[in-house]
Every structure is written in structure tokens, then in C-alpha cells.
Amino acid sequence: MPADKTAKPAKTKATKAAPKAPTPAEDTALRRSIIDHCLAMNATGFNQGTSGNLSVRQGEAMLITPSGIPYATMSPEMIARMPLSGGREDAEGPRAPSSEWRFHRDILRARPEFNAVVHAHAPYATALAMTRRGIPASHYMVALFGGDDVRCADYATFGTQALSDAALAALAGRNACLLANHGLLACGPTLEKAMAIAVELEALARQHHLALQIGGPALLTPRQMADTHEMIRALNYGNG
Image (cartoon, rainbow, N blue to C red; front, top):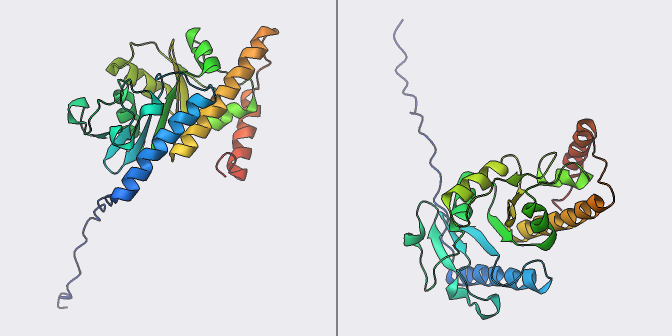
């Protein structure tokens, strides 16, 4: 029987489309949004001075707050732009990026589901971090952060690769963590969502702190936490 000479089209591997470059107006709006969130963060007492820093994914790069600039005097062009494949020497802009650029870059590079990272020295979360303790299953809202607890990352000097590595380990399977003797980290698909997660974490840290003052909280069981995770998934809770 003659061989079938009908040619079959060769299978080609799909290529990922390059991210669309933002227009100048879109770029400025995103930079302004970062500044607005910084100002709101300090106005509510959630953060103090220039201690916090924010980043947002922009294609294969990130926009990140500059180092040591008071938020009230920050302008859009001061926001640094850094490639996720590079380092501080590759940053674009008139100001150096935050000293914590490493964990911002590494989180956005390792966790594609996140497009924004919030770091703050929120009072109650930082107080717990200063004791090097995380937050166990003392409230069902712990599940909002992805697991049955909020971990506290091992201590490392600020701005170092060691701190970035510790933060990534503490964030495994989570969208937030504490940083020992330092503060908090919260991540999300948008800057608004990351900030909301950070605010929820500070509220939970305050509640846990208060419970510790009156004998300590009763912890939820693994079964109770599993039920909570199931309910959160069913209701898409926290994503509305």
C-alpha cells in the first residue's frame, strides 16, 4: 500500500508574546499610584518615615520606591525602574532604588502570580517580628495569607541577599510574612491588593498581640483551618 504522502504541518512551540510597553501616560499613572499608596500608608500610621518600600511589576522590570526620600517630596520620575534580571547597577532614574530592592526583585521573579510587593514597619506586626514569632492559627483570617500560619522569616541584615533568601523561604505557599526584628511583607496581583493584604496582616498582628496579653489565644485545629480554606475557596473570599 503506498505511503500517505499528505504532509502534516510541523508542530511549533508557542512563543510567549512580549509584554506590551506602557505608554508614557500609563507609566506616570503607575508611578503616581505608588506614591499615593506610600502617602496613605504613612498617613494612617501603618508605616513611619521612609522605612517602608513598594514595588510593582512592569513587564520584565519593576518600579520601586527610591532610597531615603520622604514620600511627601517624592515625584513620579524619582521612582526607580529595575530589570528583574539585573541588579542595582541596572536601575534607571535619578535616585537609587530602595536598599531592599533584592527581596522585591526576587519575589517578583520567583512568584509570577504577584505583581506588587509592600514592605512596612507596621507597629504590631513589627512588635511580633521583634520577638521573632509568627502568627499561628489564632484566628480564621490567618487562612487569608495562604496557610495555617504567618511565618516569621529568619533574621538577616537589611538589604542583603541573605534577607531576600529568608523572605522567599517564609513566603513559600504564602502571600505575606513577618521579617525577624524588622517588619512585614505582603504581596498581591495588584498594588491595591498587596496593600489590602498588608493592612489585614497588621490588624491580625494587633489582635494576636492583644490575645497574648490575656493568657494567649486558643488555636484552631488543622481540621478547622482546612474547613476555613475550603470556605475561602468556595466564596472566593478576600478576592472581591
